[in-house]
Amino acid sequence: MKKILYWLTEIFKKRKPSDTEEDFFRPILFQFPNLLKDSVSSEVDINNWGKDYLSKNKSVEKYIYDTCEALQICGISYTKYKKELGAYSDNELNQKTGKVVGKNFEIEARLALRRTLELFVESWHFKEITVDKEKVFRHFFLIKNLKAFYSRKSNVEEFCDFILDFDTKAILEIRAELDAISVGNVFYLASGKDFKKDTDVKDLSKSFFKLLKEAMPKMPDGQREMVGGSYQLYAETSEVVHGYSGGLTFNLKNYHQEIDGLYARVAVLSSSILEHLAIIGDNYISNKDIKEAINGLKTVDFPQNYLFNMGDKVLVLKQIKAEIVEVSTSKYGCKKYKVKYENKQKDWSWSFEREWFLLKELSKLSDI
Image (cartoon, rainbow, N blue to C red; front, side):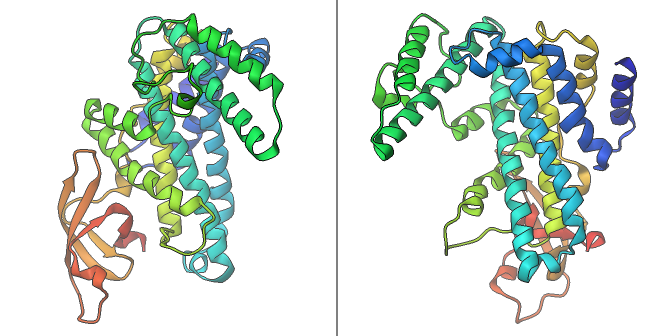
């Protein structure tokens, strides 16, 4: 075990900020989560969690285990992308059958980022909790289970004209447990909602956007920029993944560069999530070596080779050469770049009448 942890830690000591090879992704999305899962769970625990809708068994450990599993799912998605998309060029991915392939991987990468960003924000809030952790996490799971059972019960009744007796019983039991727990003003509960009222159940939890806005002002600059830029991609995801016909599309163009960038964000956010879990599980994680290794990650910023600096030569919308002359960051950490065109022509489209662009609209000339 110590050899593995030493190897994993050394990777990050030697890694350059711009290095995003396998040694960057694999430990964060596979090895570290697996070691952490093993440290907080047994086969008995895992079996109990699967059937314990009243959350009476090690809720803190369950949260750590479930979160690590979610990171590994993103790791599987990344592995498929690296293995399969490499067979296509960007040109092939923007026409005919290749376009369908590209969109498929885009959807999966965007969903991976969306899930990871939600976990990052949630775990960021949870790491701030210092007292009654087990009680708070149990309350959190009870709220989630109440919403899940109520949603399933309501849908089946409406669409199938059928009563789920087990769900009805579970809802009553969960409400009784919630009534017996006092957790104060926890971050995830929406104000003015009552778990005892059927009309309030759907809206018991705060929205992701509200949780995000509450957390961002307290983040260090590098992390806030990372999260702010990721949220812009998050916000587009709904329009990309739903199967509606017509309307605007936000699909990618520089597939290899942009999908690699999506997964790089997943990995950086995941490294922060692991750090959050180490804080959350301070007194619950039996393996002290893995906690030390996680604390040594230091990967809160987006890898520099995905960002631009003043003076960088870029291609705007993959069509026209320009130079970065100014960089601005919003209060939510989203960067935008002002460019000076080198060879703008009269017949260029309206897009080139503007000077400011987002990261995804630019390509480094060295990457073309």
